[in-house]
Length: 331
Ligand code: AHM
Ligand code: MG
Image (tube, rainbow, N blue to C red):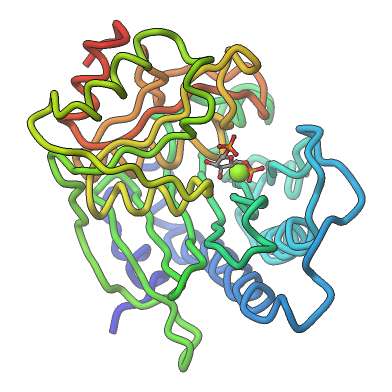
């Protein structure tokens, strides 16, 4: 039985990070803050109907969206469990306007931890899958913390997510493939259940909020029409949960494509670059898939602000190459 923390300890790729070798144990200890938070969040979700955690909190987050009680519970769990871990320089959360500086000393505060504590909030009250998405960056040797937070996705040390579903799974990449773990209720450990996960070359599902179709740029409309009409050599079905982590997880396992194109209302896209698109793009690429904003590789977008939005298209190679051809992107 290999736990997540043990697996992280064995990641040779991380040794390429200056200073990581000596601090190997402390990186794994930092990451155990994530699994601790995930267990706390999972316990709250599992028994949500029994307590008073369903429904709106009565406040709005930085995106102007109504905060659900479980959003707040999940954010508090992440802040508490990671905020006390050695190695964390700053925490950046979807729920908080500004980053929380934990350790301003560059000698000890080495990592920036960026997360969406509970993705898919609109699904919480109806007992549908939600998740936690995370991205870890190394603090830059030069420049301030802000520059360290605004690194391109290619610089991620680690990216992944926890999906709270029929079982709770954790999927991560540190640049050497994608590995999946399942929460073992008996031991409380995330146990390795799939190493080197590979996204199929082509799938048979497309996943997009089709109610927005009239607002997409024409290339996206044509593309989805092509998928529907069998233009990619197979009949597609549609699947849209409305929880990015869950829609992504299916795409990772079964292949296909997930799209959140630009719309008239949100020409820059809806999803967030730092804590939604980047970590999932890292996982997608490491599993053999691709991720773009329709035109550019997501991981190469230079962020300008921590809550930046982006259009997000991710999936199997075959579907993503066809998308690039349809919307004029680089395959
Ligand atoms: P959230 O972070 O507030 O939960 O919003 C992100 C969610 C994603 O999980 C999902 O892919 C998307 O928003 C669904 O948006 P829409 O309802 O516009 O289709
Ligand atoms: Mg989200």
